Image 1 (cartoon, rainbow, N blue to C red):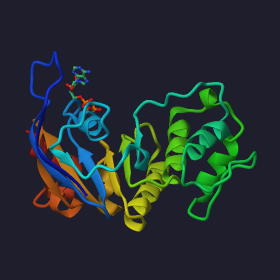
Image 2: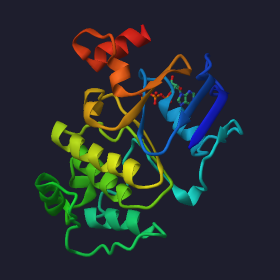
Image 3: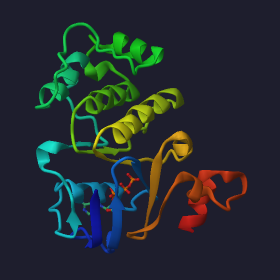
Image 4: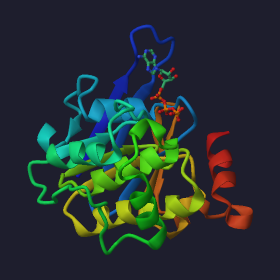
Length: 235
Ligand SMILES: Nc1ncnc2c1ncn2[C@@H]1O[C@H](COP(=O)(O)OP(=O)(O)OP(=O)(O)O)[C@@H](O)[C@H]1O
C-alpha cells in the first residue's frame, strides 16, 4: 500500500499550489483510478511517487525502482524499431520475465480474438507505422506481462477504441486482483470503469476530494452517469 500524508507541491514558476496538503491511500487488490480535470495534477502526483520529481518523505510504501514500472503518456520509441523489438525491449529489461520474444507474434490465453489479430498484424511492422492506439496497446500488453510491485499507467486508454479499452482494462484489473501489487491509473474515460473492480480517487484543487467505489461515485446522481457525477463534484 502507498500512503501519502499531507503532501504539498508546486512547480518553481507555478503561480499556484499544484498539490495542496494531499492525503490518500492506494491499496493493492483494486485498480486505483485517479481522475481529475486537465491540469489537476495527476501526472505530477505520479512523477512524485516514482521519484521523477524528488519524492518527499510524506509518500510512503513505494517499492524500489526495479520493482515499479511507469507507463508515460508519450510513446517514445525510435519509429524504425519493429513492434516485436519494442516488445522485446520491455520484456528483456524485466529481470523476472521468462517470456521469450521471437519472430512469432506473442499471444496468450487471456487475449481476445481482436487482440490476437492486432498483434499478428503489427508484429513485424515498424513502430512508427502503427497508429497511436496500436502503439499504446502494444506497450501496455508488454507492461502487463512484466512482474512489478507497483504499476502506474498514465492515461493508458487515450486514443484507444471502446473494444480495446475493455481488453486493456481487463488486463490491468487482472494484474491488480491476482498479483500482490499496487496499480495506479489515470483516465478521463469514466464510463469504462463501471465493470472494473476499482477505487476512484478524484484529484481536485490540489487534494483528493473523493475516494470510493464506482457505485459510491455515482450515488445520488440522476441517470447514474459518471460524467455528471464528475461535473457535480468539480463545480
Ligand atoms: N514542469 C512544469 N513546470 C511548471 N508547471 C508545470 C510543469 N509540469 C506541469 N505543470 C503544471 O502543473 C499542472 C498539473 O499538470 P499535470 O500534467 O500533473 O496535470 P494532469 O492532471 O496530469 O493533466 P491532464 O489530465 O491534462 O493530463 C498543470 O497546470 C501544468 O501546467
